[in-house]
Image (cartoon, rainbow, N blue to C red; front, top):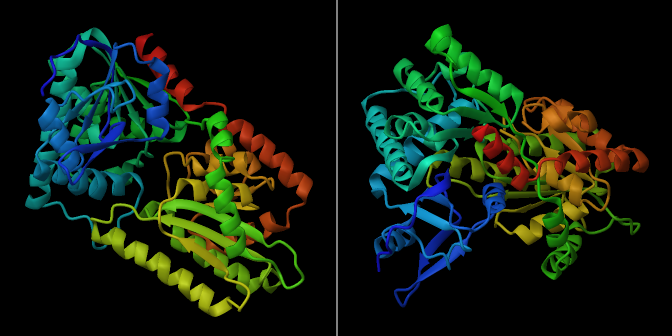
Length: 479
């Protein structure tokens, strides 16, 4: 049954993924599953008074069926009381926009992932996918224009929707529009891998906003440099204000969630997998939790661990690398290949160094939040070594939750470096020798020093919780 259009909203959020997804049941009904993460937590700061609406895309067949049944205005019983408008974008258009452009092109540019002797190559096929990206962005702009009250504040999220601010500005010049980039922003020379007209179109799309915001000053400065280089001094940021809002973690929620019975149960299982030394001592743990996303640099992390065991044989049988690598974007061949390579390297390390009583790498690839939290609690060392990352909340979560005063080995290319660098052991993510040395230093760090560093890291991690992050943007946009 299609619901009647409600009153127009004063605050709107637009993102590719919404706060709920649907799965068809055998009896024809739909199972609604609510999502988590910083954006969902952040939006809860504006309450459920009906003045806010979240616009998102239908991601799969269950979502598209929900759109058909409701006209896209979802049942608040499914969404935790939030008003959600879900867009039923044609599957082939969505696939081109999401996989063909956003994840296979823009993500690669901003994370510096291309093997440039071979890729990218922008020809007619890419231009066809780009047309779908434009169509996808236009659908969001039109829905936002339809839902927004006069002078409403609109917060557009991420690289999927880079064209929306400019399109929406043309439709509704009365609105206050913000755009937030959750990824890094590419430096000028790398951004110019994109066709010139498309690079300029992306920049002008974001510059349609009153305010463009980023996770760190580094990413904001890179965006401004791209505007100056590609659009010229008079066509740069102009009337668009630039902001920086670092995203922290919800410390109260994480601490509470990390001590529920399901986490305690998984701690018992993990301790069994980690085991003890021949003399009965607890083994130390190096913990990482990532999606098998190319930018996360999991393979080099494993290679650094292997080098640690090679160069520092005193750690053999005394340490275990607990590595959770949850599959990501497996509909793309390059991601499937990368996931397979992670498994292959882990298996090689275990074959080379493992003994009857010691498995050097405990690798899990099935997503399990409770198990991740269990690993956080057991962590002596957190390894966070991305090639490039907008922020990386794992770097903030592990020091907060660790019961062992977890030391942090952190890539200087993670956005979190801007906030956490002073108390982390900072590494060049491409340098496995330096990363192995940092792992040794972290494992050997005196308990008191590790605890003091962890205390400061936890304070920095919780300084800007998701709700405050969201409200700060909203306040700045309205100013």
